[in-house]
Image 1 (cartoon, rainbow, N blue to C red):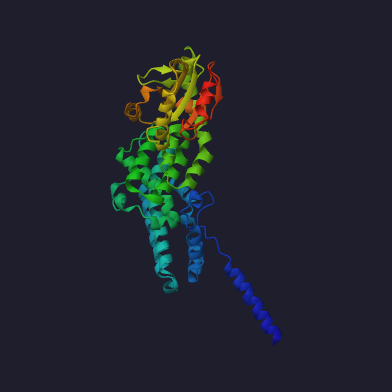
Image 2: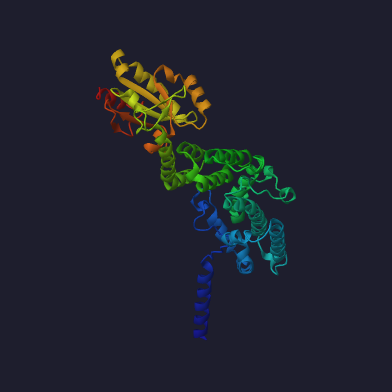
Length: 419
């Protein structure tokens, strides 16, 4: 009898150990590369607890065994290529009905938690919408000869109201997160008459503005991150920095900057190199080009024989603007001769040139400095964040590519030392 009790205790202990280890249900849990896992607002730990809670775990295992392929995005993207749109929608519709029926007719349905049932329904519904919109976007992207995005029959998307898409609670759903970038891309294309973009910067701007119009908070942060990651090589460094700065989650900002900014700079430099060939015959053509307020190009060669204090900024950058009073005070402290020998050069990375010009006038930057606009310069010197400052000596040598700010007590002595 004693040995029976020992055996039972061992078995119970083994079962407890087995059920204490959460099971990773791939149909519901984030893939390894999902940026959601990096976000400070990620609730993946709570999701795993929910999936492994009591009868929820048994249902999830049975559901995954039966419908795993329906939620395998890579597999479904391949299937999209083999059918027409009507066949595809009908297939998705039938699968959604089968999945919902499985849930509602589950023998222990009453033992499933309310939050879990809501999650399963969301996963089913948004998997349908994700894969429906993917038909349009994926087919359009794969056919570079098409000048327009493939539109879906309007009746198929009528029930998708952009005003009702934003739902932070739904971020727990893997299908909802997969749906978000497709929602923005498709409906922004619809607003653009389904014409394809030739300009990656404009494409990102329009999609990001559409996302900002309808999405908020964590939902917007996640969607912008996905859009930036997908299109980063087509962006200018300025566009990349700007839209990354619109993401509130610091973790996602850092992820994008650390993972992709070097690629953005490299792609931008390659484009700039092609443009620079046109300017090879010009003096200083090997230097990155800067555009002045009158749309005339110049390079650092213009200021040879003078010390240049370069200030990278943008009209939307608050920390940049806070330094301008210190710049003005430093300039005013110089003697007449020193003002002739030291140039304060403000280089904007604004996407909108009119906003740049307006900010120059409003802030009075012409009163104590020279002004220019350039993506080439910021790309050449890998300016990944602003404000950023550089010091160039009289011979045109870059002596400090990360110089102190105007408000620093070290800045003025460093400039005067080079006279």
